[in-house]
Length: 194
Image 1 (cartoon, rainbow, N blue to C red):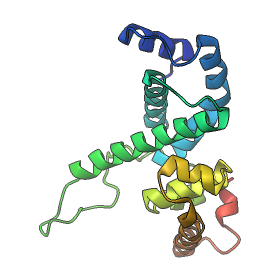
Image 2 (image 1 turned 30 degrees about the horizontal axis):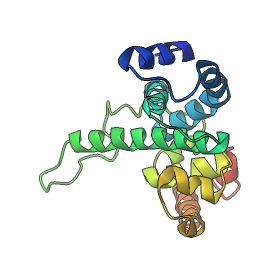
Image 3 (image 1 turned 60 degrees about the horizontal axis):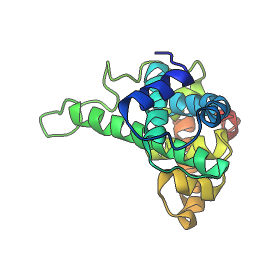
């Protein structure tokens, strides 16, 4: 589903009687600067471009539906990424609850057929990234693809800043182990994500 920034503004304006939390031009400029990185992040996080576009649109709608938004560009961008991250988490929670269980009450498959995770990136590295936990995937993408600081990742994920270094260390270690299990040697690493 493709949409324009103007359509988002129109949807928010028609759905509420109060003013937008920023001018339309300010939003259009912000959208132009942030839509591509957010789309890339959500696509890699979810593994599904169509789902990422839906989450992108909902992220901007929720941002504009707020009575107040941060004035600072960096905080506003982090807030937008936080909205997108939370929407993706909500999607996967709903998906997980809908997964079939085996006789012992466990999830039958880690990624069931038809779960919306079928659009794999061409690279084997991206396929392996899809196997790590959603939190590890979030952290790795935010740190090594988006290049965010520990403070920014903390603001987006809601995790404590002091825990970022050990969490990223463990996420890298688990990702390296998954790469090794997939037969991708030590020459493939987190650097391959960017």
